[in-house]
Length: 465
Image (cartoon, one colour):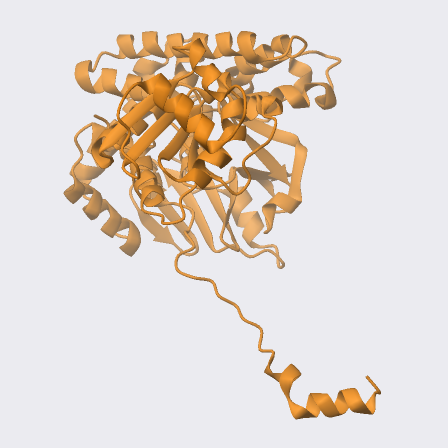
């Protein structure tokens, strides 16, 4: 069984005394159901599952009155098993096929007899079908394909090695040549295999890249079928055109998505809903340009300029017509591989908690990733060749008087070293570069004692109040 970091998030949720329903959101084939089943069987005395795809009749559970007693009666009658109060987890899976679930979950949470996890794909694109969202009764958890840390653990890298790498990262020490070379080779395989759990398992079990690619193409076909099934009639053709053009768009020197490549007369306003569909489905990752690389980045977004990455780098490789897998495995990533490297970092940065932005101007140049970490701005550059110490855009940005950057990082195939304000990290150390977490309490109390003093009473009298 592949180890997933999301398991820890499920444990945090279970141990919360004021528990809501947990809604696990993510693209198809990323391992949501498998993880929840494992969690339910390990952490609960009783686990039950209702799948609205495999059993269309299950939707009838949520017909009629949405009261806790009636819903519990319907659920227990459907499951036909003993559900122990306060010791049972019920998985409501593929809820995109039963939008009533999210309207009803409020009453099940208030009832409190059982814990509920909802899961499904394409929830973001079918939001209009939900009559009433359970605001205040539902906690969202976004899942992604395996990140590189999860991938190397699946391939047998032990905790001792991870601890050693983390020490090198935190203390900015070079990694030993043996470990560095081994991790680089694993990184090359990750570019080809990607993070879809089934593909990772195929590689771990067989090391047969041909089988991996075959399964990747099946997933791509499944995504296209989803577009045909769930997208509205007018959007199907546009969404499919965007999805199929992502590899070619990323292969362009600027990587920026050009609408007129789909149609010479195309306008963003006509395609915006189609881009949002792919993003909401978790199939594509948009990276928006900003007017200046300073926080808050969301307020500086230029939504008409963006890059569009695949949700999984392995799927990107499989969608390229050229047989590039062998070249990548041999370490030839500096020839026309910039798009693949950028994609793998977009994928891992997103799963590490960052929102994706970039900056581009004639005066400064292009900054691959401009990231907000807390209240600070950090710059990340991705290098595929040997000239990784040449980074004109970062140099230019650091010279601007009013711009401040907490970190400037260049990821490359070289070992760890620092030169001045630039930290050079090997690609695989993306596993340690994460969005900082807010921990502990944030209590702020206004001192109102001055409003209760005798002097204030005198002021009020003087003003005839």
